[in-house]
Amino acid sequence: MGKILVTHYKVRINDPENAPEKPFSVAVLSDMHNEVYRSGVMQLMEAIRNEQVSAVFSVGDLLVAKGERCACDVALDVLGRLTELYLVYAVNGNHEVRMRNVPQFREQFLEYDRRVRALGVTMVDNLRVPLRIGGSRIGLYGLEIDNGYYRKNLREGECEQPSKGRKPARKHFLTVQDMEKLVGKPQPGEYHILLAHFPRYFPTYAAWGADLTLSGHNHGGIIRLPGIGGLVGPDPGLFPKYDHGEFTIDGRKMIVSAGLGTHTIDLRINNPAELVILDFVGA
Image (cartoon, rainbow, N blue to C red; front, top):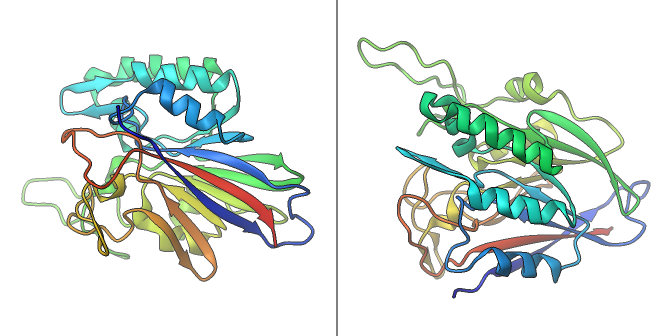
């Protein structure tokens, strides 16, 4: 039985009028893919309970939908256990979006989505949810993008060029304007937390106004090399830029979880399943 790595990040809310009256913690889940790698559901639940968190945020890909494989029973089990103890907020990742969009999986996704909501999970899919935790006003935003935005090797301002005989790609590199159409503009007077599965667009998330972005997708780089980092990810391939950890642009932060599971290649080297804990404090 493997070990779940618990990683703490200190998050400072510097606004003196919105600083926490007392510190609080939040657990972040990502990329479980219907399993907890080399561990299990009970070990994950124990790790979360030990941290005495106020809420749980999921940044997507709790299930797996890849090729002909689609499975969500473990995801539902985990969410059911969590909602008995905590407020749970979630956004869909590319696997949930694929499950919804692939015809043979669509009915299964609709049933999954119905059950998730019935359990009491608040789905923050292109929505803003106002929260008050520890006395701080938090605007929790969830970004769900369709699979066109996950296309590889697109840069800002580019659209994918269709090959001969194919229709033009409908999607392009995510811009601030795209985000504003999907989730609106950040509301003043709040600390803005963005749940966004795909870390590639961190420059856009920061420019939009996210004080803290929570992301995943890259599975920590699958194989982690000492002194180098993650070796490979779903995008852009070798040595993904946003593989794991904390990143900063103009004072705005993004934390990328290494995730809890695998898919396709059941392998993680120097890269255990990870539970992220955010510890919020004042300036």
